[in-house]
Length: 121
Image (cartoon, rainbow, N blue to C red; front, side, top):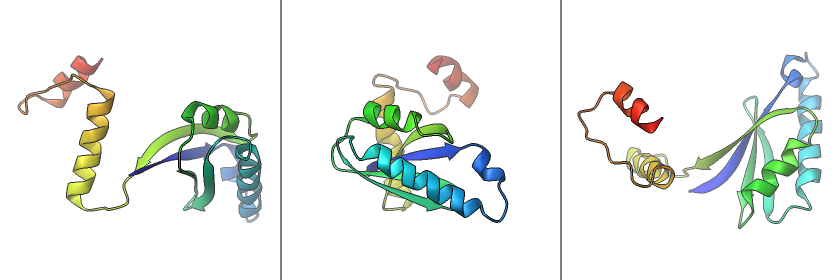
């Protein structure tokens, strides 16, 4: 499992047949912005989304702060990417994430989703 960022963009998505030019310009600007940040990053476009893959150690707050100043970005979502897409590895990844986020949260299996949401809030 490694960490990446899903970058959402604003008005670029409504461009016409030259949309790819705007997306490429945004990716290039993101790469320039991330050069001074500690860590190695790879920016790529996939199916109307832009992903920034982080390789090695980096400071998440520094990356988000740098990307916030790139014109055209409307949202930055940190994500954990699971390379092995089997059910067991996905379930383990989700379990590890929930355990990390909610350190002491233990829920009985019989609770409804509505009860779980009220406890988390």
